[in-house]
Length: 176
Image (cartoon, rainbow, N blue to C red; front, top):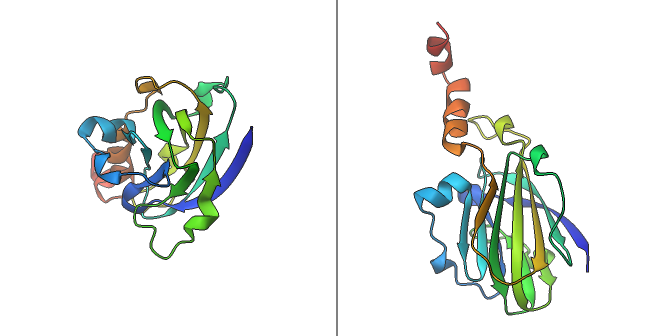
């Protein structure tokens, strides 16, 4: 079942979705805790937070038979969560989806519960004006639902503040 897909997804509102085709997005809740971990989850959708947006961000989606056994140290942040696909179609999309060909990112999958591991890379490269080399990887595999886990955490609020300072006139005053 191992399949890989590469997308450039418009991260509107600094997020993109991985979800069941029939997902109820009203259940996604961007609390302070969700913002800090760059991840909001509902029973049938994942909203992956990004450092920049609106901008197109590279996303690699992998469908696997089992949990990945890779080195997390090469990533800035890594989260795990569970959600269900009941419709048989997984969609990788943006918040508003208007004007986009959703069919291009609609993937047939086995209806079941999935575990997702979300990787966030090169987050510190993003400047205040939204330019950067950040990238995202999402690996899905069939699994019994389990609590969300933060496997590797970056201080996202500090990163956003540092990006602001580095790109503003404040940086000159702070280094004097």
